[in-house]
Every structure is written in C-alpha cells, then in structure tokens.
Image (cartoon, rainbow, N blue to C red; front, top):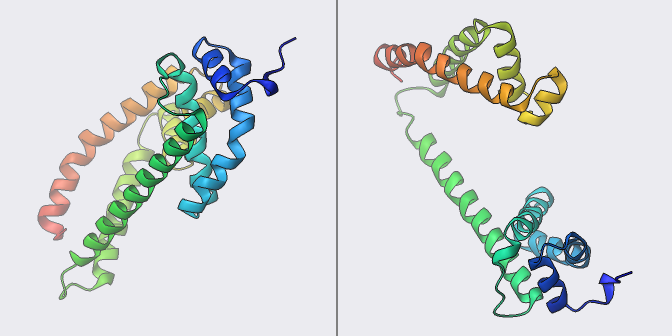
Length: 193
C-alpha cells in the first residue's frame, strides 16, 4: 500500500498530474490549514478565506494536467492563495467604491425618504410580477433568488433535474425582463428615478 504522507511535494505533484486522487487528498490535507491561515491573515474574513482556499484546490484538481511548477509546490500554493486573496480585496474595494458613488447620486434636494419610497414601489411591482409567474416557475425562482439556494439544492428539494431548475430560472428572468422592461422605463421616466 502506498503511503502518500511520506511523498515529497514533487512526488505528490507528479502523481497529481497523472490524475491520482489520493495524491490530491494528501496535498489537501497537508496544505489546507496553513493556506487557510495565510488567506485569513490577508482577508480577515473566515468565509472568504475558506472560499479562496477551496477555490484554489478546485482549480488544482481540474487543471492538474496543466501544472508546471517553476518553484516548489509550497511556493506555488502560497502564491496562488496570495493572488486570489488580493483579487478578493480588489473586488471588495471596487464594490465599496461603487456603493459610495451610488450614494452620492442622490440629489441634495431629494430626500432619502423619497428615494426609499420609490424603491419600495419598484420592489412591490417586481414582487407582483414574480407572483404572476406560473406556480412551479415561481417556486423555483423564489428558492433561487430569495432563498439563495443552488440549482442542485432546488432540484433535490423539488424532485426535479438541475436542468429543469436552470430552465425555470432562465424562463422566469426572460418573462420578468419583458414585463418589467416597460415598467422600469415608465418608472424612470415619470418617477424621477
């Protein structure tokens, strides 16, 4: 029986490149904890750090045939985590800047209350259109958009295929786009949005 824990990083990398799932498992067990701590140190967010490391390992497995290390496996993984963490931070900065800019678009003579009233009116219109969807499509759409369920979770809960879930969500969005397109235009034109 092969003892992967005694393999060097180079041996594990070569075995991984050949599609050895046990080598991947050993790399995961050997590095997950330290990579998670590395990501957490940069991001200061446990969920984001875990997502970064999980994403790295997912990519490592799916692109195992393409791995060409110029340095050690350790350096490769640490660098990949650092780069992914920096992308997350950059995305957070862009999102925060965008949100800040959106707040500055509220006209000084227009109270925030008026903005919120229009926002609630628009939300009510959207909700009315969602409620008018066919029952199964509405159920799938609400589980997807309101409850943030994945397609897989929805399929399991409703006993339908993931493809059916995708179709329902896609069709619901298409219907809502058509129905709400005119409403949004009208709302923006006459509602002062």
